[in-house]
Image 1 (cartoon, rainbow over the protein chains, first blue to last red):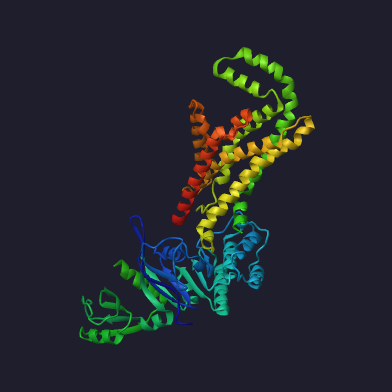
Image 2 (spheres, rainbow over the protein chains, first blue to last red):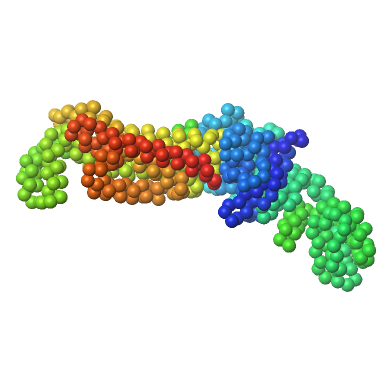
Length: 298
Length: 258
């Protein structure tokens, strides 16, 4: 993985009439990474992807994909990028063979050997009409059409949405294998924490149109800690001077902090409150996600 | 390969229209011997049983159908095309252009490395080529079949009328294409286009002397049939309106967000 960014956005904003879909998306997707773009439904994931691919125009802010400013005219971005939409939007009027040939015609670096391999692996019948395919088969076809483009960047919007666990696992494994073999960057949105944790090495959590957490997954795991202070009586209402409190929650005798760093300083500061017990524990991605999202709500 | 997409999206509408027009063209040629036998009878009945507007229409129909050229013009161009052409043009122009309905693949299309301008141009040209084939090939079939009943219909007449029908119909095609950038389904653009055509036909019928700029006057090309003069005003109006609507379609597609 290099320091070069495959995707970079700075304070990206998008407004649809009175609705502010994006309120400040800041992303840095390292080239060669598998980047999980995590957020609840309606958080702004799909809108961000549409802006990156020039399907929608940003109201303000900047977005660069493979070093090229994102815009509807940026054909070069789409030549070097493969995209799978959440709806697995394909041409229902075509057969599998027709849509494969159609798509291949736009990409000089089309990977015919991969096409053959995935056709067999995904059991795609060439004469089947796209509109008759099951959701799982349709997802596999959409993935084949994306993986065989020879793209440097794969952008996938909820790639496992609506799939049964076995089909979802197939899709994820194909993605990981492809990313490992071809050193492509994979940027995928999801609201499934487990699948992001399974394959991503970098993540961003987006909520209500804003990026709330971003970084390498290992760094985030190492950085974030849950600290619980137990008191004799009710936990005091305090605010900490030391930085790094991502979330603070008081419940009876327990004061719980989600810290994004500086745990030692926070613990030292808390000693002045004379807790009877202090417990520092590592957190999962799910904890980080839920805590940051709930912090936004608060 | 965008051509293939446009063709696949419209082929059934085109082929159904093509088959219908070929059958109609055959039917008109084969109907002529019977019509020729009935013509004297029709003349006497028409003159005696109606008056006013209806009588003038009957007299007009009888008058122009006294020979084979007039029969073909009246039945094929003035009746069949004038009545069905707008529907074929509207159906060919509707849908497919970044339609956001399920299965239309708007997101897939926009993820491809093509300019939106190319999408519009290819879609428009494919439809116009299909429209031209619908206008020309069945007309040529009349030329080919006419000797079978001992008649002759000139290639030049067939080509000129097909060209006029095509140019006139192109305006309705472009209107349907433009409406397809506003509606996600195929039916609303087609129905609105047909509604506009009905209003225009009514306005043309009521406009005394103003129909030389009319689209239906261009489609039927009565001036060419009677005097050999092409209906230039109507044709130019259609070309100008078509170009304006294609420009508007392109602007809409460029500004479209899916």
